[in-house]
Amino acid sequence: MAYGTACDRCAQRCSLVVGRRRRHARARFAPCRSGTAWYTRLLLSAVYVAGCAFRSFLPVIDIPRVVLIDSRLSSVLVGRSVATVAELCFAAQWALVLQRAAVLGDSSFAQALASVIVPLIVLAEGFSWYAVLTTGQRAHAVENSLWGLSAALIVVGIVVIGPNRLPALYPLTIAGGVIYVAFIVVYDVPMYWARWRADQVRGHQYMSIVAGIADVSRRWRVSYRWEEWRSEVPWMSLYFTFGVWSSIWLVHASLALGHGK
Image (cartoon, rainbow, N blue to C red):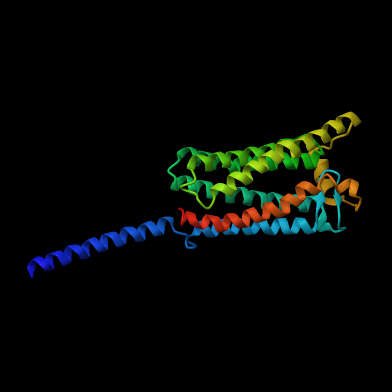
């Protein structure tokens, strides 16, 4: 009897230990909506999606001040301000996901990459505002180059962490990131660079920052001419569809990363 009782107690203790370890593993790795980290990522996505919705209904071509709807909400000042907030939230969402994945993957290199994503996009937004205010297209080329660099760093970070740690994120992030970087390099940056070169040939007069602030707040021109919108349609279409859905998908996929700290 004593021998049987001792065995029973030993089995119970082993069962308790195994149970605690399993619960700990589930808490760390299982999909989870509790904790502030996941809700922070959700909020960042919501702001980005809302900003894109606003801009898709009131599209603007910033430098020529061309709009589709004659409204003060269509002004470049309003549209660029909404875009800045939304894009910073999108960058922060990706940075947080990469940072959490790097922690789970025990990759200090990927954590370092995550830490530079938002600063790079802050810099990109600065170049964007400079381009919009001064009407200098070259700054837009620099802005989009920084976006492409940020996407490339995210892809590198995901590759370093590896597919075993990130089964929900790995394939689509790699594929989407490579396609996005290719689009930036092949289409977006050359487009803005060509516009800057054309402005140089025409002897375009650039605005000062002070004059630009006044201009973007009170001047806009309604146009429905396809010739003016044609070059904007490709990036706007991708931005307001795949960009939005990637943010929403990232919220769902990041559930596998658990709580976060």
